Length: 153
Image (cartoon, rainbow, N blue to C red):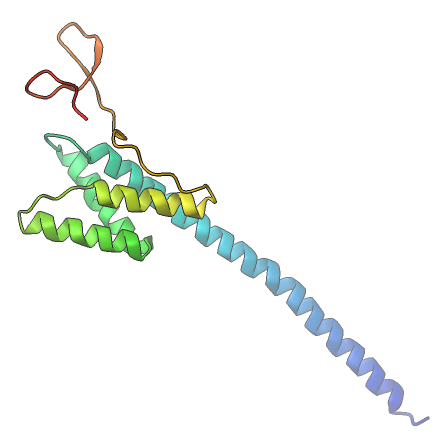
């Protein structure tokens, strides 16, 4: 047996230990980074969804609500997937061109993406997904009504 053979065995054990230690250290860091990124994306999308729901189907938007819609658009463009970005781009284009600009396609895309990220099964959005409460002159809570007195959806 040569004097260097035990050194080769020792060196290979040390290299394996260092490589194994690096792998064991890096894998949890990568997983934690992915989880943090996913959590942040879901938080952005949920916030954008809530802002869109709040602004949708309203007759008049106040300054704070307009600011919320603009903020939601920016959040979607930053962290949204292709479906959300496409729906937002269509909304913006229709709004600028003076065509009917509905937030519903953006809301549907956001809802679908958030449900997918959270691992919740896909369920169609009901037609009456946006219920608004208002107070009439008697301070009694009622659903919003249109100009004919019918419930507004």
